[in-house]
Length: 142
Image 1 (cartoon, rainbow, N blue to C red):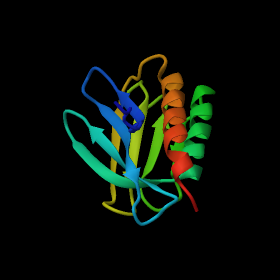
Image 2 (image 1 turned 120 degrees about the horizontal axis):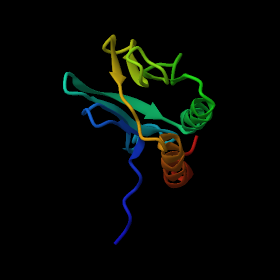
Image 3 (image 1 turned 135 degrees about the vertical axis):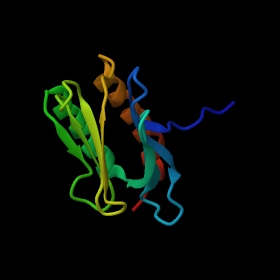
Image 4 (image 1 turned 120 degrees about the vertical axis):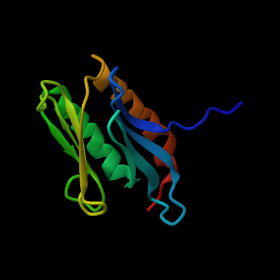
């Protein structure tokens, strides 16, 4: 039986039912250097999803963002590009970390999700990133 490809690049959730996930859907059929992905937000109040394209530079910038988070800094990922942006604020408005998904160029909606990730979440996300890169990057060209 063949292992399924890694799908969840980002998976942040808490016991209150709040979560933000970035899920790899597969190779983009029209762009050989890219992956189709989606950002999925789920809370007891609001849920939604938005499409996003991932490519090697974006995956590498997520690695840099994880390093900055590990150093105690807030981060903006995919900011200043077309499509949605994802921000992580370690000390949000409610005294816990917040993930902000902003889709200014598409729906013009911003969602702020307070959540308390598990203690080892940065190490877990480095592992997730490595699995995604090891599987998907060799297939990308361009």
